[in-house]
Length: 325
Length: 257
Ligand SMILES: Cc1cc2nc3c(=O)[nH]c(=O)nc-3n(C[C@H](O)[C@H](O)[C@H](O)COP(=O)(O)OP(=O)(O)OC[C@H]3O[C@@H](n4cnc5c(N)ncnc54)[C@H](O)[C@@H]3O)c2cc1C
Ligand SMILES: Cc1cc2nc3c(=O)[nH]c(=O)nc-3n(C[C@H](O)[C@H](O)[C@H](O)COP(=O)(O)OP(=O)(O)OC[C@H]3O[C@@H](n4cnc5c(N)ncnc54)[C@H](O)[C@@H]3O)c2cc1C
Image 1: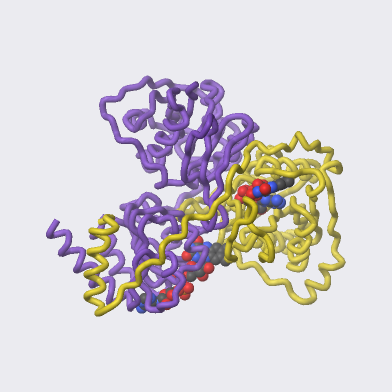
Image 2 (image 1 turned 45 degrees about the vertical axis):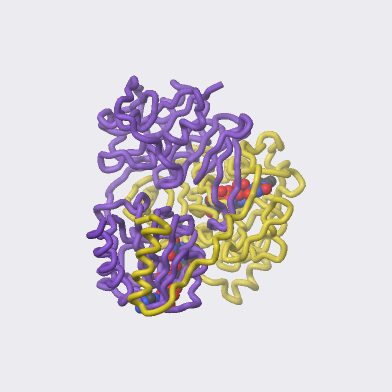
């Protein structure tokens, strides 16, 4: 029998994040011939529901409230739980983003259910919904099932491919009212540091720099290469600690976890904490002047050399390739 | 101030990982305090030094976690509690751990509870928020700065690189992110003192908990290592030629561009 699965559509800066559509794809798999219900929370999100339906949801539920304009654990939990109470889903999917990581354990606790965090894959095997997730900083994987209560998982961005968009899809939109009250945390200020442009956790190409980049200016050729390939610039903690760039660019265990099609590591040694954030990238290129650097162990292609020579040459070479294409 | 730290003993993930009998092989492996919990311990000690009070570190685990608890005591925590589940439970998950911790904390009148934002081994980041919810207190995750003045708590929180300044009130639970502080190393006198500090050991019975009240709600069905990637290709020759080859490989072989 099919299941009813609710998926949280995560809105940031007025748009849905890609992980929402990946969530719909995961939900479709779990639902089998059941129903996928998108859930949108915010102060004004109704205009976005169609995107979730086009991405594969059957219908959508929205909770709109001024108090949901910014994220708070209490506010979002109250709104989400109001939807869960109304819909009584068999399964729930959210993104394993800053928001999803903060919210999902609270929801699971309130529903007294299990939660599989940071799933990178989902399969239905012999009636069980089996999630795959990395453990030990990505050095191993486990397959996990929920044995009691609602099936609940948060999914890592950029791992479960979204379904093909189907603009002809339509679906019903209902509003649920929730009493959003007694918020125990107040957001006083938000300092946006992340660069405009391509979102690092969703970028298809990432050019990352480490301590080897040597200065803030050293990031310029990397930025040029990233721009050329429609990608984003990332960094190791080494580069952030040395103040060559902002911490918002940090990739790794403490920073962002990324899974682009192409990851170009420049002047990064490849510490385990860095690898935890990027080793699942589809193709990894390492540029490092030390042939013994650990990064070469995970790289598909490596160039031993000075990044300040290699990166500009790469820019030229890609330019001529793009002209040809 | 009555300060509690949730501390997990973890596998040092810098170690090579192997699998034996369907589980991660712990034979001969190095175990450490989860790095994010070190930030929590450090912050707790600083809070106590500035506001007075007492720091208690709490672990759910087995006897072997005594070592990590002693390290926290050597850093400067005042008391340690080991909730030993060895004899009572065969399996557990984040719900199990959170439920046990919350049951322990329920009557402790904690002003603040500090945890790590994630454990580097099984890495779910669930335990902190779950404990806070069970205790019905607010929580703030991935914090990089903490200030307490009277009942008012101001924290800076890392949100995927952006930072949010959040205000809340005691009692509260916070989870530590890298950047919060620089954890100290235990000093020699600290290590000597730690030997005499109280380390209490409890079992589920002492917490009035039954095994079935903490039964896991998830189950691991398989553990496997990622397919070993074929050794990457380190290109050779003149630099120009290498770059040409790389671009062509990315285009034609890997097909990512
Ligand atoms: C709890 C904890 C969490 C952490 N979290 C993270 C995390 O999220 N992300 C992260 O990245 N790290 C993290 N770290 C830090 C990590 O251990 C490393 O210290 C860090 O990744 C090193 O950065 P790096 O590779 O840039 O610097 P280094 O290790 O100093 O490497 C610099 C590299 O650049 C090369 N190089 C120098 N000059 C050139 C040149 N001209 N051309 C080419 N190559 C050159 C060198 O050969 C070297 O390999 C964490 C550590 C801890 C303890
Ligand atoms: C009896 C029992 C058997 C278990 N068996 C297994 C098993 O076979 N396989 C397996 O993978 N896991 C097992 N676990 C562990 C469990 O699955 C989780 O590892 C544990 O609940 C912590 O979750 P996490 O690692 O995701 O931590 P996270 O939620 O990522 O941890 C975040 C923070 O919570 C706090 N915290 C987490 N765990 C503890 C703790 N134990 N004590 C104090 N504070 C803590 C720390 O501050 C930590 O930084 C078992 C647990 C129990 C109680």
